[in-house]
Image (cartoon, rainbow, N blue to C red; front, side, top):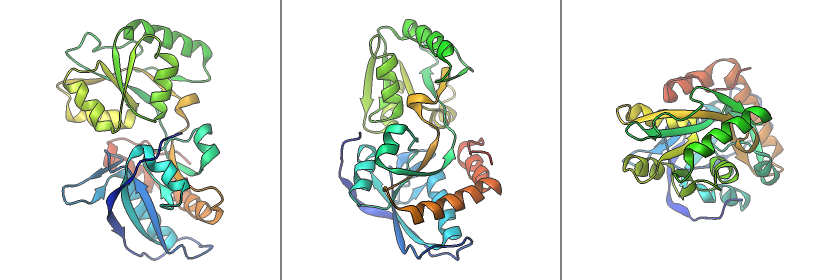
Length: 282
């Protein structure tokens, strides 16, 4: 489980009260949401200190539909779940993938993205084209997983792969490639990309949505490459994390998220921020 880190100093965004569009079991007052503020396009902090992105837009829409005020504050990734459990805030929204291990510690809402994890490499690198590009392997496909891992072990032998600390991708790399490659962890996602651009690592592994946003900014130098993986250690998409036992809040958020999926709102927000639809389907 993630280690605790301290909260950043200030609350960076305040949501306004909106007229509820869904039935409410109670008045939730002002809800405190925590995110990283540095994981674009899911969330990022502007120069004036405002947190923007796919997830802040989701929270704003949820506030309108459920009817609550909210605050979003920036928190180091490794401290998100411990801080939630300790009651520092009411919810975590930071591309947190649903996994059995995490679900033992916290509750999750309806998912708001589907997730695939993959790699990016430098176009000038010998690893510019990794095996399996365009192929997505599910964890329950034993033969497919074995083939993909065997090929990647050969490719990454003696190489260095960057990944954000305490993520599902870090767990995946340690389990499947840690015996042949150096797995270098970083506190923040952008640091992994910076070291790739500077030639300090050979590849980065992260969620494909996050990778695609990076590639679009650096199409001349970086390419998305290699097998995509889903399920198993890599979980089942991203959802809002809540403390155990908060059934009323979970029910209200689930109802609103399901409605956003059905009416296409979530898909529109996804296309706005990712340039593609990564929302679940009804």
